[in-house]
Image (cartoon, rainbow, N blue to C red; front, side, top):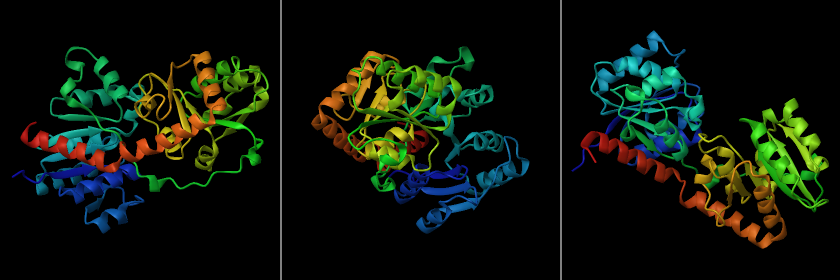
Length: 366
């Protein structure tokens, strides 16, 4: 009979996917104690589920009182697994765990972009006492394997890809009447959320517009804090479809705009993970068109639940847009399949099963 793993999780506020994962692990029979922010929106949910949630606010990467709290729980509970989520939890948790026998799992929230991993983060990942590093996408895991050298290279057996889980009920936004942002009712609408490196996505769309026949009712909605930068606006002004680009910037109702769009374009850096915006678009049956080298491509089955094209290739993107614009039946089919794929593959239950399996392998071996 397998021993029930005891797990001490040190985290922050917890987002919806993380909170749901922890609840699912608890329901699967794991003995969890969570040290996290008292102002977490999900604290009551933890307590209702029967998870022991202890308030802990870490003040930076070297919080002496926080280290003492973590160390006290390690000594009192003697957990088989210490799971550290977030930069501050990792920095303080590793100090607290010194000399203890718990297996250590690290998980960075911004590990979705390997480019955001700094020197001190990397030093934590290569530390001998660390047993696993959770990557949010396979692109991130591969990028991490390519970094470092000699003793500063993360061993492949440490790295494991576990996608965040989602539930359809989380996404209930009603489609926005796009007339309020200047889009006519007969338009084919392409949304682009470009918070991280917006010039990549906007430049790709601008190049694609150069290959589209003139005058088509295709409108582009640019969302995100970075789309109003001068360099990005210059790309829009040069486009032959300049009057069809709507620079909306940051919007509280971005989910409603995604739900009202026909397609969503996402281009990302080579080491970016799986963005929530792509998941959300798929749930709303908005067809994702994503770059081949991005984490978003791991969500999409080409020509079944979206289209995967070479990043930066304007003609390839134009061909994909024209295909969806001209064949609305095909477009609708991809949208339905996209929603089904999130509902069947990227679920909280599957994420929890992977995490539980990782825990048990650390305790008992594969």
